[in-house]
Length: 298
Ligand code: SF4
Image (tube, rainbow, N blue to C red; front, top):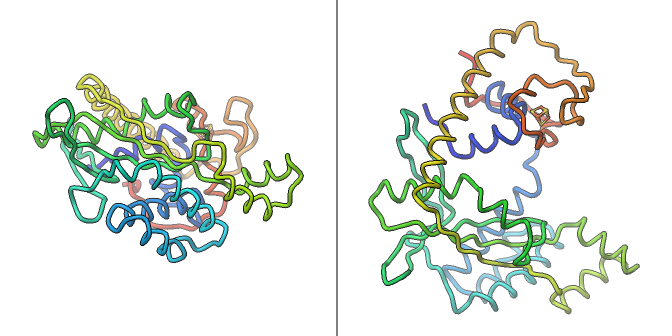
């Protein structure tokens, strides 16, 4: 059985959504906007890695389909280039993503690294995972955003994979873009009573007073890798128990959910309360289509 590191993360965020999506096979009708933007910035930075700043700027209209996203991308890329042009992290492989699979406790853990690079650290050439993120949260050095990333199970899995190959590794470099969401523009243009288009162009001229791009280096110890292995396996076991119990009741299940004060309160009574950490991500399944389930009921 394959159980990817993102399966674990998605299950923990909202077990009910995971069940709808991966066991019953419902998918959102449209790819969520934040996901599309994340992929667009991945492509842009991959292009910057390979061909440099000028060519990456010329590529922006081909990558970003919406004009205002392309405008933002120009601004962000210029800040990124200024900050990191003297510290390139070239990929060890052409085409940044690196797929992997490792065997842990009888399950196959699979996933993709955004990028793998090599760097001299403490006199030794190390394999470093570059993990790219886009966020609308503040990414100043003291922001709570970084505390959340320290706990990210994905990076532990990546390091576990590299160590399983016998490669010297332990370092992860987060490369983070603070995307300028429409809400962000709208709220500030509102605050300063400037029409949104004018606000956008002003923003580009001023180059903002905020951190738009950042890198953060994190060391992942063997202890953190072991914690990941144990937790990943537990999540998998929990999913299997819940899935089996729910599959037994599937025929008689109540479809018309009513509000329930102990649930996330947005989507009513939920079968998953016992295993829920209340970080609901059900929203983008509001408009769904039926697709192929990843873990169908046998
Ligand atoms: S209570 Fe809300 S967040 Fe928790 S599993 Fe149910 S729908 Fe998801």
